[in-house]
Length: 108
View 1 (cartoon, rainbow, N blue to C red):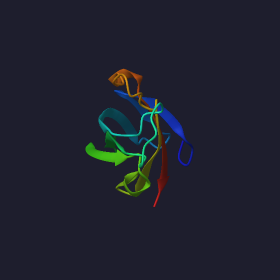
View 2: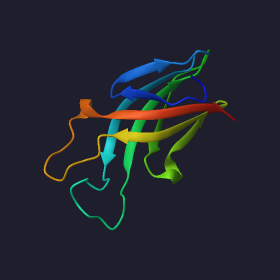
View 3: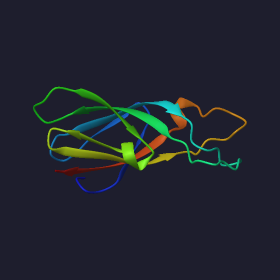
């Protein structure tokens, strides 16, 4: 899975072929522009993840939907949030278990 995109639902984890485990813990905040509204800015969502490297201790990180904060480094792994679905609606909050995050993982 290194270098390939993969999706995780909220509160789920994936173990990559070399033993790295990533868990999509939760969406901490979501101020992205709702799809049924015209916004001046795109907004941002904050995604909490837990990362357990092979033979390492679990660490918690946050990544964002905005490019400037979409990436985090754990040991020599670069983890990037490349998407978060669904886009919000203005008339209702998104249930936590509806979120699906798309990640890519590479090496530095």
